[in-house]
Length: 97
Image (cartoon, rainbow, N blue to C red):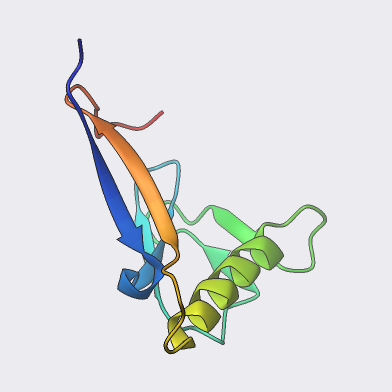
């Protein structure tokens, strides 16, 4: 049997969204963030991560996610919390897929 644990993260605890390039470089975008760049290139390998006007660009989805989390962080006196639960096994690797 593999030991497992769960990490619960409330949306109000999220301080930034991380964009991780295939090369391993990480760009941290602070929350709340209302000014998401339309063009984002990796600081490590200079690969274009998104260009807002390109077909299929993830820009809109990332912007919507960040906006939704930012809006939730502004909610006062909600009758419940909202967040993510991550299951972590004892054998989880920190490597890239």
